[in-house]
Image (cartoon, rainbow, N blue to C red; front, side):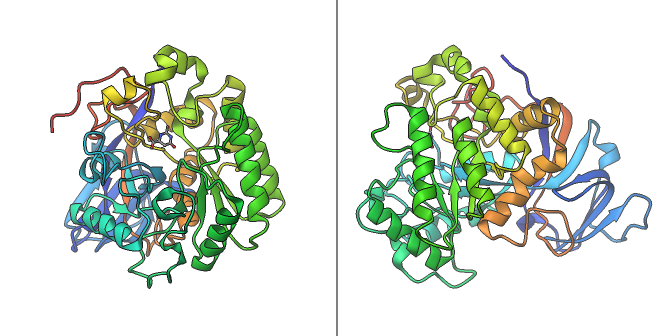
Length: 419
Ligand code: DOR
């Protein structure tokens, strides 16, 4: 079993900040653009100052977090933003609930999450998305933006609420559209959906598993090719490739971006860290099963190169909780919210040598840009104080998890958390 390093020391969601101010001091501060030691002052949930070490500090903070007293190697980072998680609510409370998923996200250092529309019923209306967002807001753990499906019931025939006017800013619960694991089979329907997405100004996350392909590698490669071909017919639409896992898909993404297409891509921690050999070890038809499947070492290396050269914009968990029984019966997917940072820190920073600021870009700044969230993703005055403190020296957290799912490929199975 591989071992991973770094853990979330504490996580702050701006909703919980005291009005009188909070000061983080004597701490390394890392975001996409910054890597310095100093202090961050927060007032009413908003970052009001980033202060290099040695400069005078504001007085009167209600709460002070002193990095020098925390032990380990603490780093203050922007809270992470996940573009791709499955919350299973409504629909499958034995796998996950909104409450358990939000807590898992919070404990994993996330401040903002997009949950996918493959709920039951499918999240295909703005009203349904708004209801989930409101329930999550009441928990005060993360800011949740449910994705809206492209078609009604994800049945691939008639378009969902994406044909409706976009709700006014502040009331729009949705920042990303996606048919999730089901690609829209009909080109006509898919093109109509892309045209609505362009009208709404929202990106479309494409899962890319071309129907009828002979194997999962060609399904992904053909799926990515199809998205690139179709999006060129809807000028101005923004598309995003979910969980890129093959070297060929990464190469197509690289080439499309070089041609100026408004295309972005994400990679999942498990594809960055694991291969088909791990799937075999875990049980390729059970605990090691995920869509897209764990790939060859060659694909994994190509994916890391694509992360390194900026072809891959973001890390997204594809958090997919299942019960033990469903997993044994072959349900695909892994939980990921509580392990993503330690896995990516180990693979991308410690092993592949990427700067920590690049990992911050992958987990915060880039996802914020993709979602159009201009108020977060960096540590800078005026932005929301969604912050997380990671300890780079701690052994990775290995459970028990807040998620109801226990289906992690990274650590030996743990007894479920007491509920
Ligand atoms: O393995 C997967 N399971 N991949 C996905 O993208 C969907 C997910 C699920 O919903 O279980």
